[in-house]
Amino acid sequence: MKAFWDERYQKVEYAYGKTPNEFLAVNLGNTDTKILLPAEGEGRNAVFAAKNGCDVTAFDTSSEGREKALKLAEAEQVQIDYQIESFESFTAQTNEFDAIALIYAHIPHEIRTAAYRHLLKFLKPGGRVIFEAFSKNQLGLSSGGPKNEAMLFSETEVKAIFSDLTVNYLAEEEVNLNEGPFHQGTAKVIRFIGTK
Image (cartoon, rainbow, N blue to C red; front, side, top):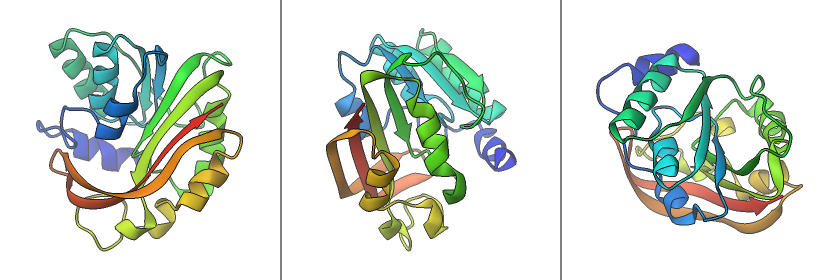
């Protein structure tokens, strides 16, 4: 997977644009002062959060993604802590973050529940998960996302993965994506906000 993402991110153009994911932008709150962004790619969401006063930690396996994220942060005159890590290898202080934003953080089905739950130990009590990913109904649409149904989500799966959180919002929605060349057009997504 690292090779796939390095190849995608080594182009000059930002694969998913430089502006933040809309669901994150609308729902990032004043209390989300210290935020973790896993699978952050080229940094669009991390830079947005930093510009809004957040203390940002991000990670991804792609060194090409990190390089472009740091370039974007420099251009926008903000600081982000961007690490090269996997979901399983990432570590931080227990209860360190006010929020975790999982934005299109699609990983193999067989590891994702354990991987996502691993991150929850770093979320403060009262902290929030902000999540958006493609639903299983995205198959057949050309607006982006994995072509493997097992890597896509249903509401039931998201609820089960985050069963220890209080559900504030959970819905499958049809959205019109305009996020760089790889997220364009009508899409079916799962959106979730949960509190620890």
